[in-house]
Image 1 (cartoon, rainbow, N blue to C red):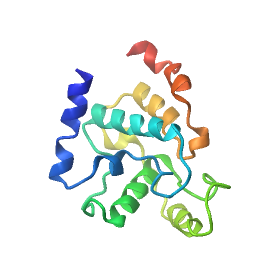
Image 2: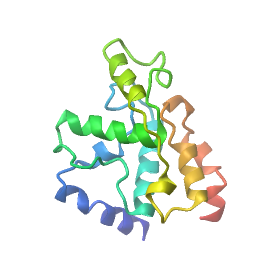
Image 3: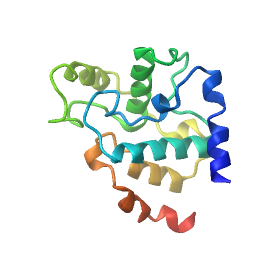
Image 4: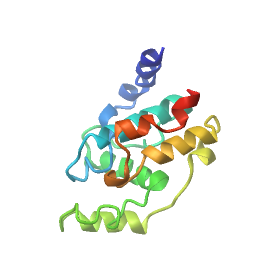
Length: 156
């Protein structure tokens, strides 16, 4: 059933000319920051949110076509708004001088809003779990083993 729901969630992406990985990708990947398996934790969270809310929360309105760098920047802006700020403090010691100005822009344009405000069909327990795994700084994101110990799994 979960696999079916996952595949059904992907149906709309080709229609929008969106590549799956750009929408669900952890912030560190398009920023060119070295990434680990914790990027997969982010992707699981983004996929889970999509399945529960039936909404691609990181897909910007009027998204640029797949492969266009503006799409990645738009997705990063949406990630910034939900789980940011994506800023120099979050990626301190991980970025080079080329990426720092991009991070400063995200700090300047940080407009936080919550899942509950945008998606009515998500409960507080879901939000708590996603807040736990969807950390912008990958060093603060839990490992898969740690995520599995979250109380959310006791009720699933």
